[in-house]
Image (cartoon, rainbow, N blue to C red; front, side, top):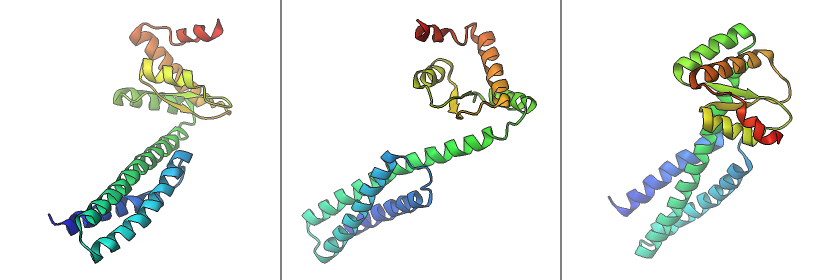
Length: 182
């Protein structure tokens, strides 16, 4: 493959990722915003490097352009993974808010159980990270913090999860809470 083709395809892939990231910008965290700014800077550097490369095809210019374009690709890949994850979480939250009654919670629970995709909902002013980590690590649950308003249908879902784990694993679901009460 010629040098120009390598640079061309690096820029095409990076540009496509950059465009995707701009289109899906909702909910990007501070880390994602920093990557986006760095990515924009490398977009400018990549364009300048390509112009210089096209004007004079030396090995040094080729290597510099290749390195800058590769960094641009890496930054956009990092940002794309975060944007995709945030879109996934947004989709999951939209499914959560469809659970409006205990009957729907029960249906959702059995469907999730069948798919091996159990969730657990926490409530309150802020998320308690040790609890989230414990539930994710110990019981392989996807934990969603849904804020201050306690939703009875989600409580119904949580109770089904707790009963299932107590029955399946012969464990007291909240036994770990003792470590914070002492």
